Amino acid sequence: MIAAAGLVLGIVAGLFLEPTVPLWLQPYLPIAVVAALDAVFGGLRSLLDGIFDDKVFVVSFVANVLVAALIVFLGDQLGVGSQLSTGVVVVLGIRIFSNAAAIRRHLFSA
Amino acid sequence: MSTDPPEDHRPKHARGGRSRLRAALPPRASRGQLVAALLCALLGFAAAVQVRSNQDSDLTGLRQTDLVRILDDVTERSARLQAEARDLEQAREQVTDGTDGSRAALEEARARVRTLGILAGTLPATGPGIEFTISDPAGEVRADVLLDALQELRDAGAEAVELGTVGGPIVRVVASTHLTDVDAAGVEVDGTALEAPYRFRVIGEPGTLAAALDIPGGVLDVLRQRDAQGSVTQLEELTISSLRPAPAPEYARPAPEDATDDDG
Image 1 (cartoon, rainbow over the protein chains, first blue to last red):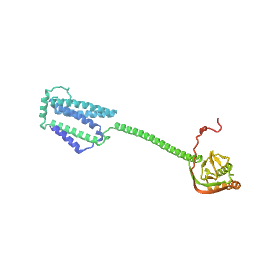
Image 2 (cartoon, each protein chain N blue to C red; image 1 turned 90 degrees about the horizontal axis):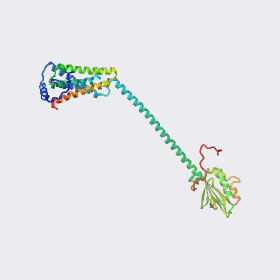
Image 3 (cartoon, rainbow over the protein chains, first blue to last red; image 1 turned 30 degrees about the vertical axis):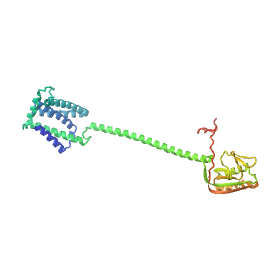
Image 4 (tube, each protein chain N blue to C red; image 1 turned 180 degrees about the vertical axis):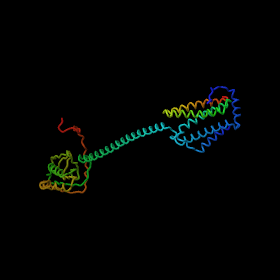
């Protein structure tokens, strides 16, 4: 509940504060957001599975974001940044879908 | 990261899932809950910021290589469009030049047709000139006198000539005109019989034409010797409206422009 409130609070803050994204963060932010989304869906699923653990969630969240950013950074250095970003987004998208499917089964038994 | 155990199809957990969700709803101020909430807030914040910045501009979110590629594309596209514009301008110039040239040629051809029409007697002509009336009570004016008069007029710069009987038939005089004596009286001009009194109507410089007829030993003197009278009237404006058809040459054809005079 507190997490959901925090999510809403963050969205509202982002919409109203309108900060500009620092230049060095611009390539990483979208990937980081997708990775964090994956972590959140994973956390929700584990909650429904009854195996949710705060510590695991925090670690997975941070690690997801960092690894995604690292991959993008590495891709940029190798000159394949856009392709690698696409790859990361695809992988994370697949994971989000499978997590969402598990959550759906839990909530709707279907 | 431990968020992806292999998917299991366990509908029997559905009840448990919902109840667990319900159980998680009441806020508990544990440290882990707060950290998770903080991370979720961070996610929402970042997502909102990203969405917002993505809406602001298409290009600011792109990385350097993409920007370079886009710049290349734009440069190439602009070069291509410039080349196309150059081609089209060239084509337009050619077209306008062509129409201008053909219009000028057409105008020139029309002017030529008018000139040649006057010379060939297929077009009416108007301008200053003289009327030269020959009364011939004695019947002594024959084709030779009229031909002399015509030659004098031509020498004096007559540009369009018609010859006729006063109040009678009129013949347009052209380069091929021939005059023949008729046995009894009068002359035949290009197959048309004319009788006295005759009248030349001539377009040219009136003073020159009149003077050409009046020279000593000239046409008027000859007429006087033959008991005939010639009277010349200079006119500011007269119209020669008698026409003749232009005969189509049966054998002669225009020679090619590069043909020389002495070839086969």
